[in-house]
Each structure stands twice: as C-alpha cells, then as structure tokens.
Length: 116
Image (cartoon, rainbow, N blue to C red; front, side):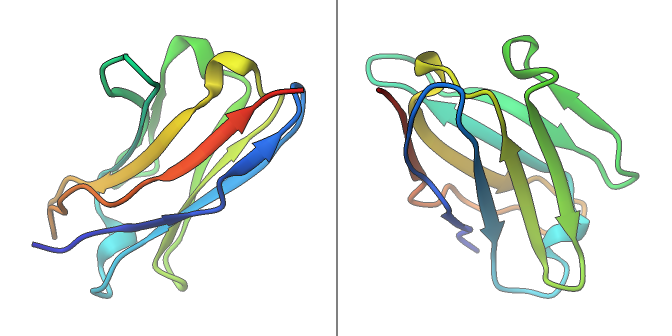
C-alpha cells in the first residue's frame, strides 16, 4: 500500500507558524480526498482537516481560522499551513489519501512541538 511522506515539522514558540507538506508516489495523490490527523502523547489520533476533490474543507473546531489546508497538483503535494500555534497543537501530524484514486496507509508522521 502506498505510504505518504510528511515533512515540515519542528519546534516553534507559541504564536508561531509552520507549514507541513505531504506527498506520496503516484501522480494522482493530491487529487484525492486528503486528511491531516494528529496524535498527541497519551491521546487518540484525531482528524484535523479534510480537503475533498472539489476543494471543500472541513476543520476541527480547535484549529478553525488558524490552520489552512491546500494542495498543489503540479507538485502532487498537500500542505497544512499552521498559524498562531498553541502548546496544545503539539503532536505527531499525519496525512492520508482516502480515495477516489488511491487510499494510502499511515506514514511516519512529522513531529510538531509548540513550546517556549
């Protein structure tokens, strides 16, 4: 099964910004319904945002207005722009394609740590 590759995580101070990237092999990856998820220590994985094939989006309430998902089909990449980061955003972030062209497995994720 195709495994996505997430990147762009790091350590950032509260109020800072990061942009995560997600790609996978196959030219149609970014054309799918793509979701970003996160898992904080001791907590269940939760869906942060979804972008559908028409560009419609659905955000977790706690990130609405701070996070923005986008895709660049020419680069076969989906991005997650994260602004006004809070300590509670600290987690490993994962992306996933959910069809209609491909369904990926879980990748390794990218660590985001928000701390002063």
